[in-house]
Length: 258
Image 1 (spheres, one colour):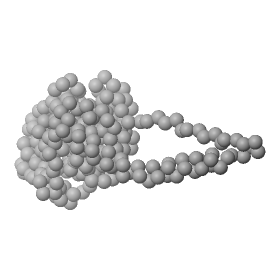
Image 2 (cartoon, helix red, strand yellow):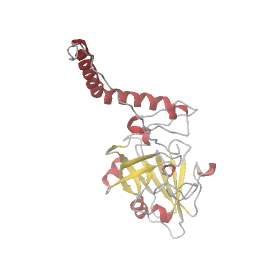
Image 3 (cartoon, one colour):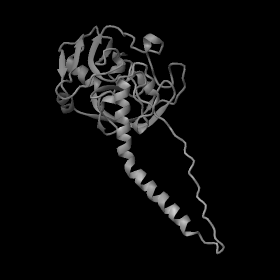
Image 4 (cartoon, helix red, strand yellow):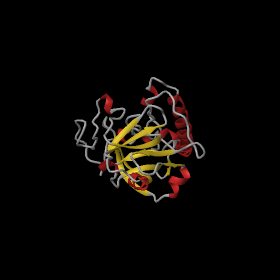
């Protein structure tokens, strides 16, 4: 999962058309027909592009979930993003099956359905998404419940020092200190790019930690556990920094996303 989404920038060199010239210096009829045909074809391509892109995205996402090698993650997906998972497949959750549990060092253990989370006050953030491998997706909207609101509702016990996040892919995990988790720019996100969070992007619910590299924003979030110490997450056990501030960690000097 790591940097779960990736932006791909493509450089295009526009083709330049030259009129065919007759002795009178005017374009020939066949030249005009070719140009008009190119314009019509281009317009049809623009009109069809959203439908073709959606079909491509659906095919890629389905293939990636059955690809234990992870090589399908090298292909670009819609909107410049990529599908990443550290497992060969991820189950789908919906209105009936999804639950988010809050437990650990809290006074009130809680379980939220999607409808419960949507009924809570929502916060919208628009920030750049920065991957530790170097790519950035500018001005990406996320919307959801502030993590601090869920922690306050649960009643954090005095000995608590950190928060651990578990995902329903069965493998990924992440952690934040309690101070980091209480920031106003840390969300339990339900929406991305002003639409419900899709499965390929970690839906129906994911963590969004705006000021940190994107591997901290765990996809397919299923459990929030308050603990007395920080437990290194999936990528941190493989060498990534536990404190992943953009531009101030992992040996990188990227421009901060806040």
